[in-house]
Length: 262
Image (cartoon, rainbow, N blue to C red; front, side, top):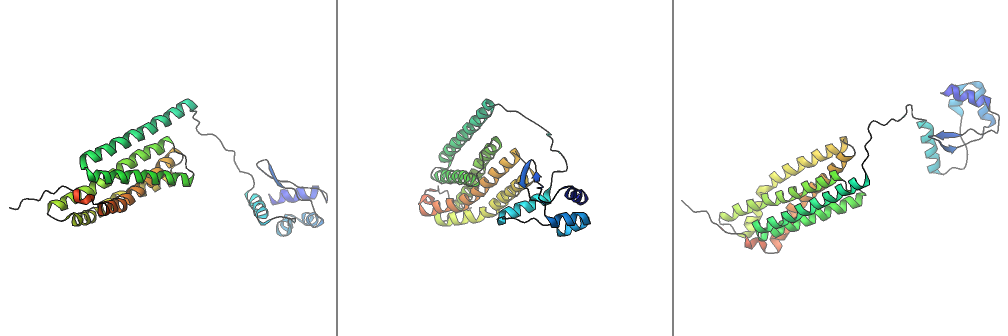
């Protein structure tokens, strides 16, 4: 490469321009100087060691030109390995159906939690709504686009958020059955469910990060929504739910069924 460049310089006259082109884009066209011509006559080693490009460049322009000179053209052509065409009607219909699936599952989970856990179900519903807001805000902040795999990750997030609250609530009810006060039951329930929640959610987040780093396209969309959703569910379950139970007095409505003593 250096020898061919030196030969090109030897053929050009002083004052002629030599364009620097990458992928069809001209980044610079410096004029051949007398010193460059003399270096070319001495051989490619002299060109490689002494050739410089002078001009009125900004720092960013000089940095870009250096990158272009180091990069050069791609050694091979880029080929298409797989091509799929999805019509706009099919794509929009799939997104619409996916969005409808999120809404239906979201509403059904909200209703189920209230019917089964009563007042504590309202806490779980508030945590779920907060988690969805966190996920959508994060996606918007990252400039991510919601795709079908991303919708699947959101639906899974709904289940993970509710599952965390179910574990906590059942632990609280167990503590309440032993005769403890509502506040003591809440503290004990969260303490006993902490390790299980951390293990389950952290392993899921690690898996999602591996999928994001090794996957591409649809896999990345699923992984990022899943990771954001699980991280948000962990925060909402351990922080938001506990805060609501302790400050709103809902913990006082936990049913008391003291275990009979033998």
